[in-house]
Length: 399
Image 1 (spheres, rainbow, N blue to C red):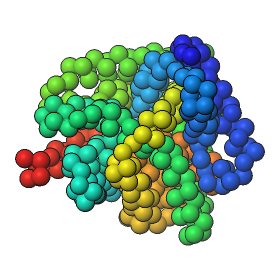
Image 2: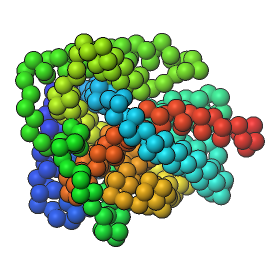
Image 3: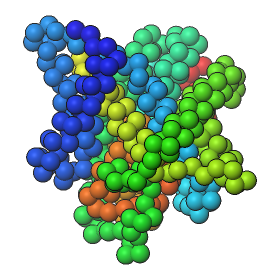
């Protein structure tokens, strides 16, 4: 049974509504701050898996709109990036970037070490590390092609997609409990002077926003420019030493557009409309991504690879608690940053944002986390990850 684009969009909307109702009726899920798209999406993925296994009914979703939704989300991240605000959080951004690079190195060293211990190709360990976990599906697929063509790793693309999918699930499940443990164990709370008045739109996804039709149309036009120019830029850079994923280029265009129009005083981006459309695209993207997971493919993962991924998930949780949290200040903001780090350290930046939204909705705002995580998780990490991967490929074990 195949669902077309509109039917898939309808299903994704229902997934979000079902996830919301389940969370409202399940204190345990609310306690551990599991995001709505993760709850509803995994439920549908399990249902599809059961239909296929028991009744031999194979349900397929049309995921055509998944990429445009993801690019729209990253465009809104860029359009929300005020360089003056980023300058205010500059030190924290640089420190967090250092923490993120440390995780990339740890993931790759751990993956290669485990693969060698289990008698597997070290490239398999690298695929089960920062290539797919911190890198996500796009980075994983790109490097898998390199591993297959230049290093002869069989089924590299299939392995990469499976690893990235596994990480996406765990990224949405691990971040909330890690942050909640840190907050409750250390008795943390937002600083008294912090209030919702300074919160970003992504920090308050359920807030009522006074916007107009004109503002929405203007924002849609800005997003369209980001998608068109960013995609064209990514196409031009493809195959060069400066190649970047399309979503990074889209985000970069968004930053330039927002600040380029604001500095001369020509136009000021209406942030309420930007964040509204960003939150809608974020929720729908995660719902489609999770409900269309092929859990059967994950179930068929070879035991060594599954062992590597499970150890990586445990290592991520430990790194977030003992490194991210402590280096970033051992305060409430650091705990929310740890939740976000789990989200994109195992899955993707949208998962990181969803994790932080679930935490701040329960415990209070964290302006610093929503300032730092989107830029590091969506932009800097891909550049840093590419450098780290290339350095590990220089090791003698690959020669």
